[in-house]
Length: 288
Image (tube, rainbow, N blue to C red; front, top):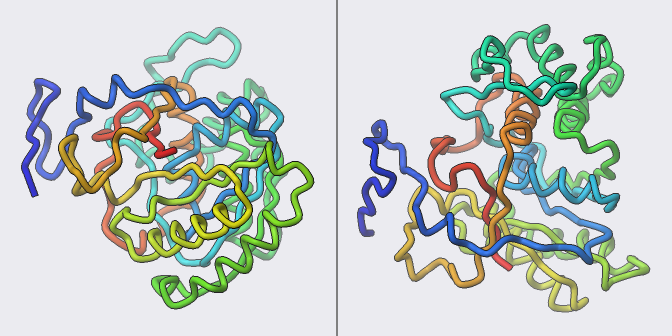
């Protein structure tokens, strides 16, 4: 595979791949007709890492959100190592003394303060109102979506084995069909899933299942990239870059994604961590 080097003018740390200038010129992602989004998430928080900004954008437009969680296994985080300045929700001005770094959010009190800042709230105790008793994973997801600013999410848990989705694709097709097939307005429906060529077995299985269902019901499919960022470059013929679209992320939205990831604590990922802050940079990239 070709080494694409540092195209941003700086020298990245070992293993860090800088954003490519070509990504800046991608056409914007527009989903104006989307009134309901069904997300296929192979692992908890996958969708937050890869598409948290898009989830927030559509929720702000009052689109309903369903998330089909395929496994209960751990996912990766979306925490940039350099940290972000969390803006004051009332003034919009960045506060240099409130730069948030990954380690800072390991402390529950600090996380609650960040969430309060993002929500423009004065009382940090509100962060505990959304916890789901008896289920730490659901509690973390609820807190994560609150951090994103997504008020309502219908979650469907399939409970398949982590790392074994390629052997259970029929189950994924069946579960997704039960959701998509009963939507009253299919023209306003979009399905969001991993790209089927991503390079992670579970992601690819989920992507193939989504392709089957969307083709059968003639529903629009939007695909996210995740592990592809660790091996793909702007000249990679394996990636259909002509179908790539971008969603630019503001500092506030990036901070919300970081806080959402921190809601899961320090649980380890199921596979190698990607160097956040590199490609795709301050944007989310999707294939349409």
